[in-house]
Image 1 (spheres, helix red, strand yellow):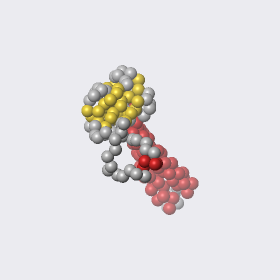
Image 2 (cartoon, helix red, strand yellow; image 1 turned 180 degrees about the vertical axis):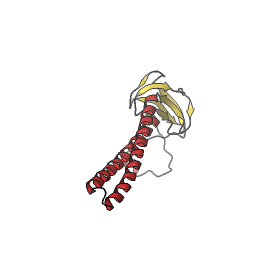
Image 3 (spheres, helix red, strand yellow; image 1 turned 45 degrees about the horizontal axis):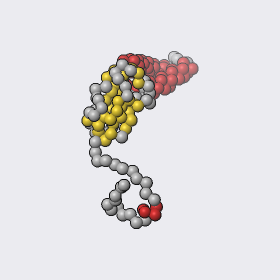
Image 4 (tube, helix red, strand yellow; image 1 turned 120 degrees about the vertical axis):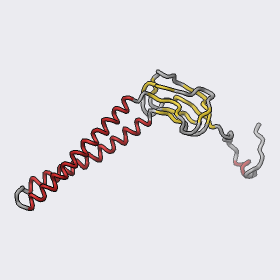
Length: 169
């Protein structure tokens, strides 16, 4: 069994399944509005591109500065400034990469997908309602064989064998 909830909040955009529907692993069961999350992703991608362009330019500047410093035309202090700028932009590039990855994760979290083949046993939200992070929206039970968990006293366990038929009253 699974209680499925979003990790991000938002207005439920669609829920194409009903109680009793059979679902397949990976099937989309519900989606919250994702425009804001997709806009955040777009901004993160644009920021990563901007930083990459500035880093590429700084590396070209650094190559020129090294040549000019070796020729004695440019002071060593200016070379050190450009080296520091490259180091800073490399760090910003790493941070931008992480922001893009996190934005992609958040966009993916706007959809609930079936974790296994099963049957929808309960739905708690209708399209248009607000889905709070962590609040169960859909319940799915596996479509396979039934599974039971039974507590057995140790005095009985010593006489039990794997595969032995047992009567439950």
